[in-house]
Length: 191
Image (cartoon, rainbow, N blue to C red; front, side, top):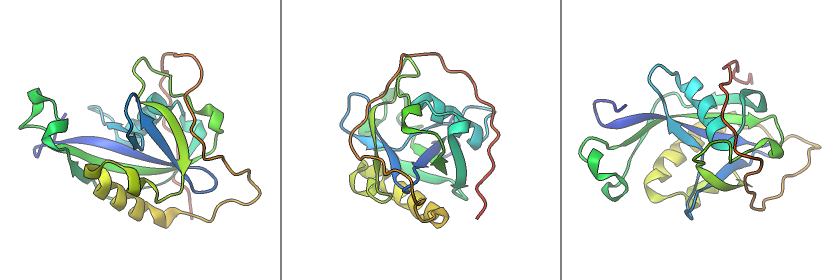
């Protein structure tokens, strides 16, 4: 589903731990890292799409996270032609995204990268909030900058007396299972 300008409606997810570090995933069989993201299906709200993508891509359900904020408007990026499949060139220009900032209320072991038949990520780690700007693929950098900047107003000081998560590489766990739908019942965090 593309809009009139050739942009696919999409959601992006910035997931924080208690130290305000962001969840960063390594794409399957690639050396590129990114935040979870995915398309909005016909009839879905951005929030419903975000919860579906969160579960499909990293195995977390609504009860594992709390919505802290979201971008006010769509953020767009264009995809260079050499990344676009030939059959959609000329029509597809890129993504327009609503970004969500989430706080993880579950545990690291709740992450399951192998929940679906075709996983997006094969490893993950926690990173300092701004680090993704240094390593994300060039054509996404401006959108990442704008999303991180806009959502940074919701950051609080790291919670005290919580164990600090190691910054080492992690891989998915658990057997592949089929995804169950999760009801959408999350309220934004009050300041």
